[in-house]
Length: 188
Image 1 (cartoon, rainbow, N blue to C red):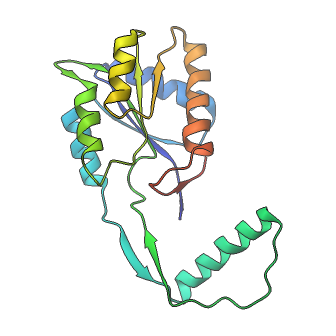
Image 2: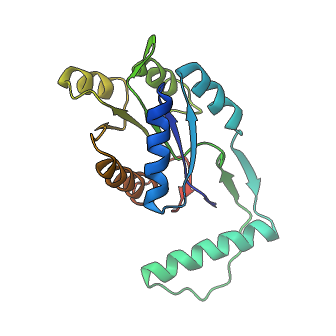
Image 3: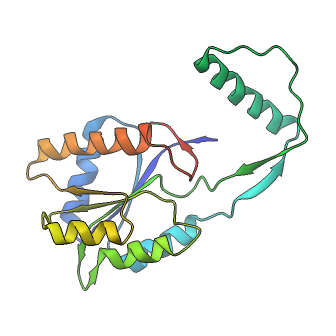
Protein backbone atom coordinates (compact mmCIF):
# COMPACT_ATOMS: atom_id res chain seq x y z
CA UNK A 1 0.00 0.00 0.00
CA UNK A 2 1.51 3.33 -1.03
CA UNK A 3 0.61 6.14 1.34
CA UNK A 4 1.53 9.77 1.51
CA UNK A 5 4.59 10.05 3.76
CA UNK A 6 4.32 11.96 7.00
CA UNK A 7 6.62 13.29 9.69
CA UNK A 8 5.89 13.74 13.37
CA UNK A 9 8.08 16.54 14.73
CA UNK A 10 8.35 16.57 18.53
CA UNK A 11 9.80 19.90 19.68
CA UNK A 12 8.72 22.09 22.59
CA UNK A 13 9.60 25.36 20.81
CA UNK A 14 6.77 26.83 18.70
CA UNK A 15 9.38 28.83 16.77
CA UNK A 16 11.43 25.73 15.93
CA UNK A 17 8.29 23.87 14.82
CA UNK A 18 7.31 26.77 12.56
CA UNK A 19 10.83 27.04 11.08
CA UNK A 20 10.77 23.33 10.25
CA UNK A 21 7.30 23.67 8.68
CA UNK A 22 8.55 26.55 6.51
CA UNK A 23 11.72 24.64 5.57
CA UNK A 24 9.67 21.57 4.63
CA UNK A 25 7.41 23.74 2.44
CA UNK A 26 10.52 25.10 0.68
CA UNK A 27 11.62 21.58 -0.30
CA UNK A 28 8.57 21.10 -2.53
CA UNK A 29 8.17 17.52 -1.29
CA UNK A 30 4.68 16.16 -0.73
CA UNK A 31 4.91 15.33 2.98
CA UNK A 32 2.35 15.74 5.76
CA UNK A 33 3.77 17.31 8.92
CA UNK A 34 2.36 16.65 12.38
CA UNK A 35 3.80 18.42 15.40
CA UNK A 36 3.66 17.82 19.13
CA UNK A 37 5.30 19.80 21.91
CA UNK A 38 5.96 17.06 24.47
CA UNK A 39 6.49 13.33 24.71
CA UNK A 40 3.16 12.51 26.35
CA UNK A 41 1.19 14.34 23.64
CA UNK A 42 3.32 12.61 20.98
CA UNK A 43 2.64 9.17 22.44
CA UNK A 44 -1.12 9.90 22.63
CA UNK A 45 -1.00 11.05 18.99
CA UNK A 46 0.70 7.81 17.92
CA UNK A 47 -1.84 5.73 19.83
CA UNK A 48 -4.67 7.64 18.14
CA UNK A 49 -3.13 6.95 14.70
CA UNK A 50 -2.53 3.27 15.37
CA UNK A 51 -4.75 0.83 13.57
CA UNK A 52 -3.89 -2.74 14.31
CA UNK A 53 -2.44 -4.58 11.34
CA UNK A 54 -4.87 -7.03 9.94
CA UNK A 55 -4.48 -10.07 7.76
CA UNK A 56 -6.80 -9.72 4.83
CA UNK A 57 -7.69 -12.67 2.58
CA UNK A 58 -6.75 -12.08 -1.03
CA UNK A 59 -10.03 -11.53 -2.81
CA UNK A 60 -10.62 -10.13 -6.25
CA UNK A 61 -9.95 -6.49 -5.25
CA UNK A 62 -6.89 -7.38 -3.18
CA UNK A 63 -5.67 -9.72 -5.88
CA UNK A 64 -5.81 -6.90 -8.44
CA UNK A 65 -3.73 -4.72 -6.11
CA UNK A 66 -1.22 -7.52 -5.62
CA UNK A 67 -1.04 -8.19 -9.37
CA UNK A 68 -0.25 -4.53 -9.96
CA UNK A 69 2.51 -4.66 -7.33
CA UNK A 70 3.97 -7.84 -8.86
CA UNK A 71 3.85 -6.34 -12.36
CA UNK A 72 5.55 -3.16 -11.14
CA UNK A 73 8.27 -5.17 -9.40
CA UNK A 74 8.76 -7.33 -12.50
CA UNK A 75 9.01 -4.24 -14.70
CA UNK A 76 11.74 -2.85 -12.46
CA UNK A 77 13.58 -6.16 -12.42
CA UNK A 78 13.20 -6.69 -16.15
CA UNK A 79 11.44 -10.01 -15.55
CA UNK A 80 8.31 -11.02 -17.37
CA UNK A 81 6.05 -13.82 -16.16
CA UNK A 82 3.24 -15.00 -18.37
CA UNK A 83 1.63 -17.62 -16.14
CA UNK A 84 -1.71 -16.68 -14.59
CA UNK A 85 -1.69 -15.39 -11.04
CA UNK A 86 -3.82 -17.14 -8.46
CA UNK A 87 -3.51 -17.22 -4.71
CA UNK A 88 -5.47 -18.20 -1.67
CA UNK A 89 -2.84 -16.72 0.65
CA UNK A 90 -3.33 -13.76 2.94
CA UNK A 91 -1.69 -10.39 2.72
CA UNK A 92 -0.74 -8.40 5.86
CA UNK A 93 -1.94 -4.82 5.99
CA UNK A 94 0.11 -2.30 7.99
CA UNK A 95 -1.13 0.79 9.76
CA UNK A 96 -0.99 3.55 7.11
CA UNK A 97 -1.88 6.23 9.67
CA UNK A 98 1.39 6.14 11.59
CA UNK A 99 4.00 8.72 10.59
CA UNK A 100 6.73 7.57 8.25
CA UNK A 101 9.37 9.32 10.35
CA UNK A 102 9.62 10.86 13.81
CA UNK A 103 11.97 13.78 14.40
CA UNK A 104 12.58 14.07 18.13
CA UNK A 105 14.16 17.03 19.90
CA UNK A 106 16.43 15.72 22.61
CA UNK A 107 16.03 18.49 25.16
CA UNK A 108 12.35 18.98 25.85
CA UNK A 109 11.17 21.09 28.80
CA UNK A 110 11.20 18.90 31.87
CA UNK A 111 11.93 15.70 29.97
CA UNK A 112 14.69 14.12 27.96
CA UNK A 113 13.70 12.93 24.47
CA UNK A 114 15.33 9.55 25.10
CA UNK A 115 12.52 8.74 27.54
CA UNK A 116 10.07 8.70 24.63
CA UNK A 117 12.55 6.82 22.48
CA UNK A 118 12.84 4.04 25.07
CA UNK A 119 9.06 3.93 25.39
CA UNK A 120 8.60 3.60 21.63
CA UNK A 121 11.25 0.89 21.31
CA UNK A 122 9.60 -1.16 24.08
CA UNK A 123 6.13 -0.96 22.45
CA UNK A 124 5.66 -3.50 19.64
CA UNK A 125 3.28 -1.14 17.83
CA UNK A 126 5.93 1.57 17.42
CA UNK A 127 9.26 -0.23 17.79
CA UNK A 128 10.01 -0.21 14.05
CA UNK A 129 9.20 3.48 13.48
CA UNK A 130 12.28 5.41 12.34
CA UNK A 131 13.10 7.99 15.03
CA UNK A 132 15.78 10.55 14.27
CA UNK A 133 17.01 12.73 17.11
CA UNK A 134 16.88 16.28 15.72
CA UNK A 135 18.62 18.54 18.20
CA UNK A 136 20.95 21.47 18.78
CA UNK A 137 23.28 19.32 20.89
CA UNK A 138 26.60 18.35 19.33
CA UNK A 139 27.73 16.67 22.56
CA UNK A 140 29.24 13.19 21.93
CA UNK A 141 27.61 11.96 25.18
CA UNK A 142 24.14 12.92 23.86
CA UNK A 143 24.93 11.20 20.57
CA UNK A 144 26.02 7.98 22.29
CA UNK A 145 23.07 8.07 24.71
CA UNK A 146 20.58 8.58 21.86
CA UNK A 147 21.86 5.59 19.92
CA UNK A 148 21.91 3.45 23.06
CA UNK A 149 18.21 4.33 23.56
CA UNK A 150 17.37 3.16 20.03
CA UNK A 151 17.68 6.24 17.81
CA UNK A 152 17.64 5.49 14.08
CA UNK A 153 19.71 8.59 13.39
CA UNK A 154 21.09 11.75 14.99
CA UNK A 155 21.08 15.13 13.24
CA UNK A 156 22.30 18.43 14.66
CA UNK A 157 19.95 21.26 13.66
CA UNK A 158 21.60 23.65 11.21
CA UNK A 159 22.20 27.25 12.26
CA UNK A 160 20.72 28.99 9.20
CA UNK A 161 17.38 28.74 7.42
CA UNK A 162 18.97 27.85 4.06
CA UNK A 163 20.92 25.03 5.70
CA UNK A 164 17.71 23.88 7.43
CA UNK A 165 15.93 23.68 4.05
CA UNK A 166 18.76 21.55 2.62
CA UNK A 167 18.91 19.39 5.74
CA UNK A 168 15.13 18.88 5.66
CA UNK A 169 15.23 17.88 1.99
CA UNK A 170 18.06 15.43 2.66
CA UNK A 171 16.24 13.93 5.66
CA UNK A 172 13.07 13.47 3.63
CA UNK A 173 14.84 11.99 0.63
CA UNK A 174 16.73 9.48 2.73
CA UNK A 175 14.12 8.49 5.32
CA UNK A 176 11.00 8.77 3.15
CA UNK A 177 12.31 7.76 -0.27
CA UNK A 178 15.42 5.60 0.00
CA UNK A 179 15.13 3.97 3.42
CA UNK A 180 13.03 0.83 3.66
CA UNK A 181 10.94 0.49 6.79
CA UNK A 182 9.03 -2.35 8.40
CA UNK A 183 6.10 0.06 8.82
CA UNK A 184 4.98 -0.05 5.17
CA UNK A 185 5.75 1.61 1.87
CA UNK A 186 5.92 5.36 1.46
CA UNK A 187 6.72 7.49 -1.52
CA UNK A 188 7.38 11.24 -1.86
